[in-house]
Image (cartoon, rainbow, N blue to C red; front, side):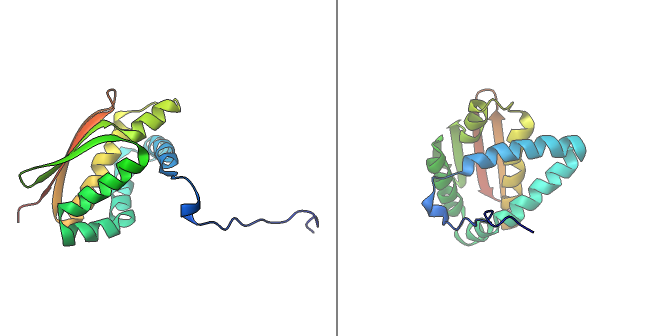
Length: 159
């Protein structure tokens, strides 16, 4: 029988009552990739990340399909402004280009003494590809984890 003085307390809060906490997600992702790779293998980790891209970002996929690259531009701007990333969004012809001068995810992990590997940065490539492919777009990402810098490109896949 439970002690009368012990009670279950349920936290009932709205997300907007708290400071933005997405950076904690980066730490969780780092642990997940490390452990999945170790126990399941990189192929299974990649398959999981593709499913994440298609399910978690389903609303973005719909927006990208309906609105084009402006939806992706809006998404990246919102995320990077909330996280304090240094970035530039521009268009080169029909291509959206995001140049990241300071990746907030990599910076957060380094501040918390987590080793940033190419596998962590690969999550960006895998998740972006899942989002883009599902919506009829393509993407690329050239990154330098040591420099915390990357260039991501997005374009409509030719029919």
